Length: 102
Image (cartoon, rainbow, N blue to C red; front, side):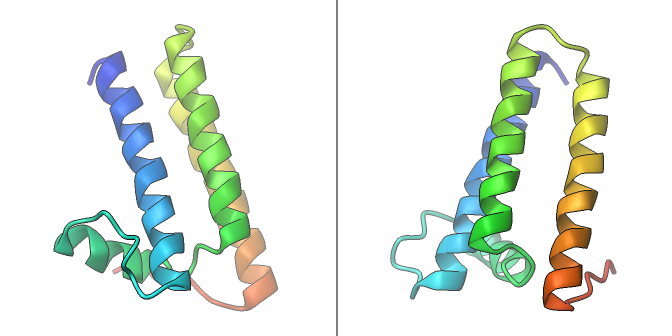
């Protein structure tokens, strides 16, 4: 995947985080997602709060800037994965919700 594809992936990640927050905190009229995206966002929305979503969006936007600046994408995505683990584990400690991967 080239740099433009990587930036699009990060932008899509920001979009999905927004959808998670919108669907968790409203009746869904503000949602701009397809039915499949809505289903995924509803599932993830149980684990993404407004606070963690804000952190994640900042993380993804920062990564987009780094990729535009010609930073090695492998390092950028590895850094994102570590930081996302920290965000989810901190959220899990606060809420007591366990994330299960099927």
